[in-house]
Every structure is written in structure tokens, then in C-alpha cells.
Length: 282
Image (cartoon, rainbow, N blue to C red; front, top):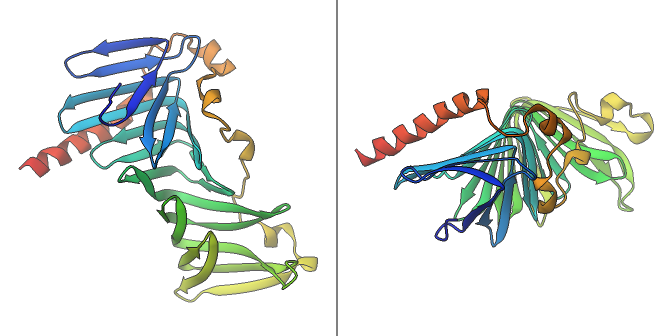
């Protein structure tokens, strides 16, 4: 337990090294559960294996390997693997990550959650970035691009920037709140500004293309961007479910032992973080 950073871990089995404050927690009867105070709330993190160390006074990191799940009251996420470091206070989710906030779903090759003053301030989606928001019934407002950067203030979305082959579909309504049509836009990049969880304006850059199709004539191609998948069924609903071991894990590796290729990949990030710390000291 780290009382200064308000962090703790619950686990059935743990390997621990005092000198580097290294621990490796793995699944036994239940999966290990890490928690940290964030945004006057608690962020819970679980995976089949959790690894952490504090090799110096200025560097602390945590790795989560296989079937990562995050639960916070206003934000949930899943991925195959995760890395967090105090160097930049950023959670990096690797391999098919998905993140949810209210009715909005983020997906891409990599998702990074930035903490600023113990609050989630930014969400970065890198490569094949896709955001979908359930509007009503079975209609989804959608945004995609090479990269997406969402900016939050007190857990509320205030701006979203989409760069590289940006596309969007938003549904238009009349004064009676009835659907009028699907509005599709394509351009190099887009900026969406929000207030009180409602979009107030949109800026399209570099020769935007716009088409609006009436709902009565709209086909699936008009209603959904390529790559759309709604994955609500995979969303964590409670921190209690995070410790449940999947059947595949019980069969494949009940002890949690063994090498994982992700550890090598994350070690590269870890070494880069360590170099950044050394550069700052110099």
C-alpha cells in the first residue's frame, strides 16, 4: 500500500523484492486488483498479472498483462495490456483497447489516459481512432481518423480534435426532436467543441466534403462509418467483477507464471521513461 499516492493492491499471491519495491501479483482464486484515488473517486485496475516497481525515488511504474480491465464511476476501459509511469502520469492501453465514458465509446490501436492533478484530463487515441456516441434508439454519432485527442475538464468533455483522414456522421433533428437526416463530413482534420455535454460548434479544415441524406433514404453506408463496432457488452459494470478469472485464463495459465511478450515491449517504454528522468536531472 502507498498511503502518499493513495494506492493499494489486493491479491491472493505476490512475489516481492524489497530493494526495488518490485512486486508481481498474479491470479489464483481471484485476479489481483490495483486501486488509486483519482478525481475524488477511485480508479480500479485488474489483469491476469500486475507488475510494479519503484527502482528510484523519482520513478514508479505498473504493468498489467492480459485481459486488462479498468473501472471508475465515470470511465471504464479494457485492453490486452497496459503500462503506467509516474514520469508522465499516463495510462497506456495496448492491443485492441476500448474506453467508455457515459454513452461514448473510444477505440483504436492504442489509447492513452492522461492524469493531471489526479484527474483524467486527456484521452489520446492513436491509429485507427474511432469514437461512437449513442444518440438515441440505435443511432450513433461517429468520428474517425488517424488520431483523436479528447480534452476533459472535471471529467466533462470540452473539446475533441481529429487528425488525418477525418470522417464524421452526426444525426440532425427538427424542433420536435425527430430525426431529419444523417450528416456526413470528410476532411483532413476536425475540431468539436462541447459545453454542458452538448456539442456547440464544429470546425472542418482543408476542403471539407459534406453530404446530408434524409432518414427515409439513408442506407447502412449513410448511417455507419467503416469500422463501426458497438462493444457495450464488453464494458465493465462494477469494480467487483474485475477480480473474476476468465475461463480461458484458468485453462491456459492458472499460476500466472511464465514470460509474456508484452513485458519486453513495455520494458522499452520503461527504459525511455528512465532516460527522460535522467535527462531532467542533468
